[in-house]
Amino acid sequence: MDTLTEIASAVWQLPFPVGHVYIVALPDDGYAVVDTGIPGSAPAILDALARLGGRPDQLRQIVLTHSHIDHMGSAADLVAATGARVLAGAPDAPYIRGTAPEPAPAFTAAEQTLFEGIMANFAAAGVPPLRHVEVDVALQEGDTLDDWPEPVRVLHVPGHTPGGIALHLPESRLLFPGDIIGTGPGGTPAVLGPGNVDRETAIASFRRLAALDDVDTVCVPHGDPIRGGARAVLAAATPEKDWL
Image (cartoon, rainbow, N blue to C red; front, top):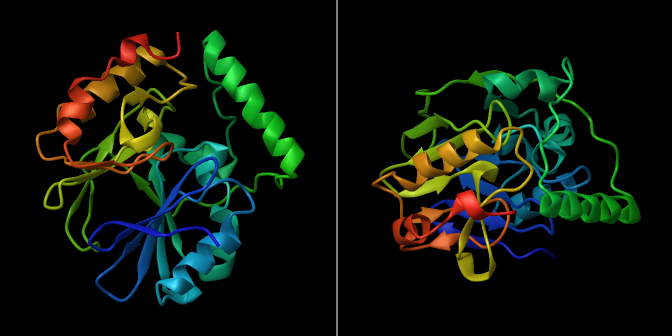
């Protein structure tokens, strides 16, 4: 059984070997998930929801930070099981729907080695093929999610993919950065996520998130969450030097 960790009020992390999922309790007795892990992760996500007291039909929203397989991988299965709506950044919506080919990352040598190892592990584990899914709400910079426990700012943070988004909860001082930010053990140090379509744009997005005043907790999809003191951790980061 995967461990559920409460990160903040009404926010839990469900860790996976690749691509963590975050579950958020909504005020209407519903739930949202931020990202969905690789294909085949839906049963574990639904089990975690049940452990929180939720039924499948209470999963209202699936928010995808971007289009990569370890983030949208189980969205179609979750929609089929729950009827949840899918929200994602507008530029990534065609890749999630499968109506346009996803742009390939421009790997550094270190990133290429990492990627090949991950793909080999997927093959060895028999990860199911990716199923595309409809995007019900195409999100833009400046949008808000008003049906969460507090207003959520949608930030367009391109570079990892063209339509990557971050979710910023200023009242809770919490950030879901997508793959723009990752961490090592213990939530530090913070690093630029690997495998970007445009490295310089991804670095600019990292710096934008690092400059947010009202962030203490960063719910990264890879690595351990930064829990407290996030501004200092992000200020000390050197994304320009990562993965070279």
